[in-house]
Image (tube, rainbow, N blue to C red; front, side, top):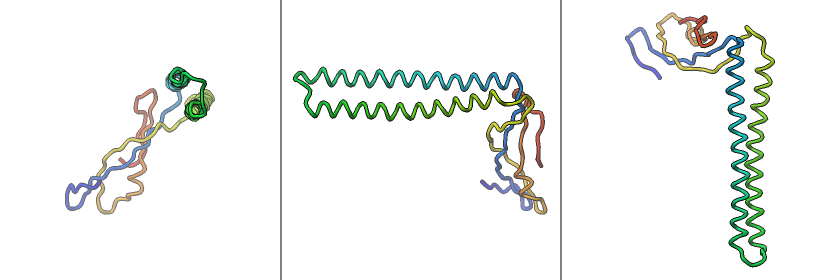
Length: 151
């Protein structure tokens, strides 16, 4: 996004990398967030299982006579769908468990990437755009410790 500020200066948008210093508090909060995600996935897995069982029970209840091939196919389709969804949720859970393990292995005072935010900056003729684009903010427990790069 470009906005003209004056004839010799431009206001531009750039990504700003956010890094955090690993502290005991940071590790604890990261582990709590990941554990909350795991708990949510476990809850979704339980709900999925119950919904599948309810749907199968409903089909069986509606077919009063001995189940024919159509009923059997419906039940198999539900089980297939439940298993696919379950597999996706378990993959997500395994990824989060790996992240949790990585967080536990981080050393104190190590710097880790936290993501990006966008920020605005001005640039004038003669300034190095590449240097101006390389800015990062270092946090310790949420407090800015350092701003690196050409502001």
